[in-house]
Image (cartoon, rainbow, N blue to C red; front, side, top):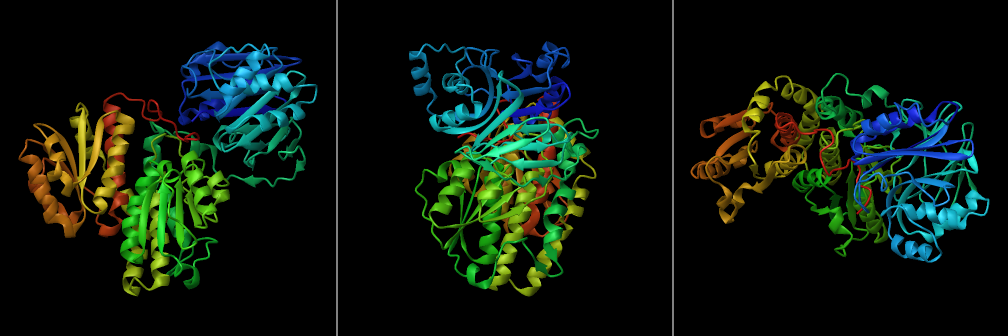
Length: 608
């Protein structure tokens, strides 16, 4: 949530900042603003609403003038969305302007202290306290003031700073919030996401916790929390800027749905070497695998749902007890974990605050940690003992699609690797599953070849206010993600239930016309699902089944049917997810929703 872009170079900053903010829209925001230095003055323009409003206020970026600046998209936490609460925030004397992602936990205490010293605040935000503290401690040395402020504030932050006395300089500081430095030719950038600067450079440096960056057009200097210079090694991001563009699709979400064959290929095929699974640099061998007594899979939202699919798969093939934990609950549950527990941390962005906190706690208690993430050099990737990148590529739409399916694919690889080492899977079944995994991209392509039928059902059901999803086994796991996708982007109340639990209370919610999506891909559970579907229909409910070809006969007991391509039952959650993503997309489109940027949601949740 929230986005930061900063520029120091030889070009006019405002147009570059506006373009960068547009590329950060997917993170979720309700206002935006820029600050530009020109000589010894800082000019600030802010606007509530979409970037278009800011674009109009700046005459399309023609004003304000200046070649150094910072920009921000805000998602309100402290203070309502308004021009005055928008970033950048300026100190009382106009000397400093700051943009901030995160939360300053002790801002109330600091604000009261400054007010007692005569400082007047303009906004209701926690972020403004940073600008006012900089003014309070500034005695001519900007770095010294920044170091003092960093010692005073607590919480999480990524901050860009302008000072009128140093009009050619941007400072940046970071703690527990993503911030990268982009290295260009006679121009340098700060950004909360590569996408904001990818049009200008592919070379980046990840700013570490407690570190500081000083940027001019021609140089970047890094410091630690004591102000001592640091050497940082750049890395290259090979994503093409076209990957962050819609490419002719009406929405990023639809584009990213169609990118899933390529994304799954990037996740799976480089790791399958003949009949072996090679998980990058993860040192899985008999000694360390046989020490594992249990596995904790930790994530939020869709990452948590991926973990539930992974739990079923790993327990079946590895015969190891697996717990799937919500990261937001994990850190407060006094988790039972030690050096015989493997903790798998899942996050698309690699910056999710709850998940990062869970990772740190698991490591502190002695657990070996493996991160499954998409973004290279993200905080979770850096701090985990091992990392398995999904290589899904940039995901711009807030509602994850390829991020989720590649996480599930990565969990399949981990499960099969451990099972092979433990000899809990036969050689024949192992080879069969490897073959099925490598064929998934082609099957996803087939699932997407003709989506007109899915669209027709979506159009038919779009006016409903409540939709239920039911399934058994991994179909229940898949239904959780299907329901989340629908509620995220269409704002329809959607809930997933284990089909066997209907008779224990939830069937009381079924009435005439209630829409239920029934997932029927697990052949061993077909007869049980048939009974559940009949129970729904006997109470007037309408059933749209999503089934595998082996279970196509469910058509006779359904009001509608969507078939996924033929697939091993254990791998159907990926294909089911694709179909349900398309269904959710077209329901939202029929309802006229803002599909890529659903209300109140953000792509990267960097605060608790």
